Length: 503
Ligand code: CLF
Ligand code: SF4
Image (cartoon, rainbow, N blue to C red):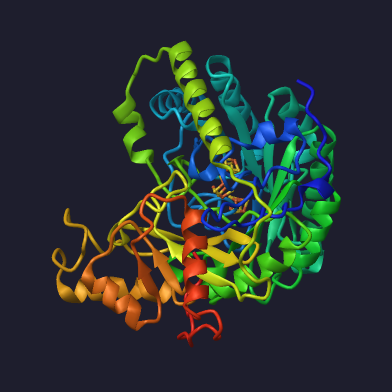
């Protein structure tokens, strides 16, 4: 299939549309893209922020080997370029992976993408990776195919990637300066030889950039992931963003380094810290002025299943799915209907207007949202394992990140304080308040008295009045209420300093 070549200049985030009284709807963030490209990203949960509320992806862990060493990776765990460290995937053969992928795609009709992202590097295991894609495409040609690589052997695999109709590729590029690279990559394996230091980093960077250009020339959409490592590449990532955009990358995903001594990584053991949420957002904001930024990445596992942020992998372990018999035609028809229904609903909900009742100099406000998906405020505060963070501005509401938090409520009454011992509930609630320290409101479907009063005392206004509303509408309604109440005349309340990283 001939794929349209993407012009990176067109991939800059579009204006989010205007906000009208009473709706607050953002515009179509893909509106600036050619229709052929919109078609390719509107159901990809990573390439389209809107899609991530509605469509699911799955990864199959078929690629155990790697050809480089990153200082944030411990080979005992999954590839940290696309996965949280600390979780290990069940390694599958291509046949097992294809069976699992097809079973999941038959059970979850929102499934739109199959990705290979580890646990090592997919292109260091090319036979296993491509065999998996081939087997799945034979039975489910509607699924989009996606892979994520460190890029070292990318140029030699570009033709095969195109032949397999893999339309989306992620390259992790942490630097374009070999001196900086030498602080991130101690060695690579190149031409059957282990190469160290600056020489290794220079080869890796050259291959990554060459592979990026070759993919773009073939019309394959390329997302670049970068791990933000304070003191090493944080300043430099602006230059990386500009360079990959110039070479045609579609999207840049700057992810926080997750570093902990218990992961046994070089950075974890040497005390290298990850960025704070504020540091990450500031860098994303700056880079986002010139390049489309992904801000909804969940750094998911190499065997993740479901919507971003949820993990249904355990439901589909090999011993559970056994030899399930699948009617592939029926499954595909169900997916087609489901996807068409979602796209039609989103189109009909989209309200564009030039009317804007919020003065342009109104200060922005961060709000945390408890959402179980579908782009709605539809989760109980006490059930949220993560909160989406939206920034309300006069131009509209936009997702700027997410914050993971401990689940502190485990009971059916969903209020927390009656279920767990007070100390336990309090300590987990305290953590939630700490990770949301810079948000001025939290929007959820319901909330108990205890967390309500503690959030208020911490200067975060709890709000359960917008249950089941679209997130953007709810955020803009609350923003407007704050404006009318005079709360936006003052600077945001003093917050205690955040000491957690963003993830
Ligand atoms: Fe998987 Fe990656 Fe494809 Fe998405 S994930 S291979 S592009 S289908 Fe997505 Fe997960 Fe972030 Fe990756 S949220 S870690 S960006
Ligand atoms: Fe680890 Fe992935 Fe880096 Fe390989 S590319 S060392 S698996 S993080």
